[in-house]
Length: 357
Image (tube, rainbow, N blue to C red; front, side, top):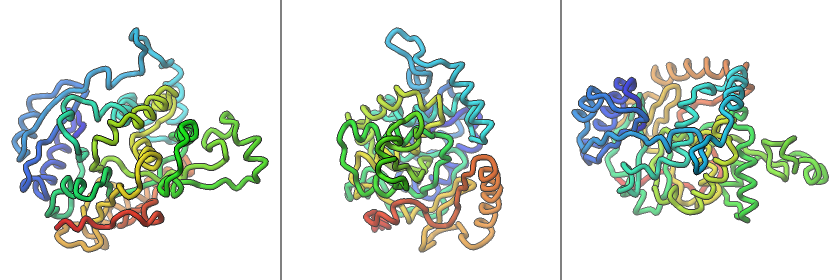
């Protein structure tokens, strides 16, 4: 869990839920990371409710800072970046002016897997403050991942706000083409094919300054991505040479600060680009809530989430307000439903259930 001392209440809520629904039977260790020194109050409270060992570590400045060269000098113009943040804020982009948010996205995209606190582990389950697990989980997801040769698991897929990361897909597509990486079914499923005639695509859309949200063939990203505040994944994928190379090239472009590139799109498109789609798993049977979104398993067995009652109506009410704001300010609407929306349904080769009970 990445948290701050001020997240004490939300961290207690999330870990209590995780323990009650799952970890009290497995006693896995929980690693807490903070870019500042932990308060004793936080350490004592979370240690008391964790059935496994609770580890509290800080994030080194090298992993939570502006990009620097070998001499320690900034590689980016902070003033220019902050001016870009103000423009994004004016366009309704959430968290655009929060420097810590940009650092967090970059940390999870390129450094998290190398933090010394997680070095001993092959798999991780990302937990956020204030989340709730709404169903009993009567099996070990890590063992299920290993047995089925899965490298990434999710419960929710959403649409990113396109204006938060307009050049992100172009950067990804350029890497794909430069390294001659063949398209997977997962990559194809997130594509929005160009409507333009071939001559226009060939002579005009290759100009990144004019069509920076499209690849040089004119195709674009449909903005679907796995919501990374819940992810169960194999560290080996993110520690691989090819993923590291991808992150270095994207990081050098400055998009984590000049725009609001997120770790969720980074992980999602990296998987679409580099992974076998059959190794991505939909944890349909894990109930999960992070307002204003939630996922309820279709069976609803052993769950305390009500996908047709008060719980969902409250979440939908909150989401309608979000939809109105984003529709008015950015032209983007986020959709909420009790099933996971996303590309995996169209790809058709992701497993729907763990069959691990």
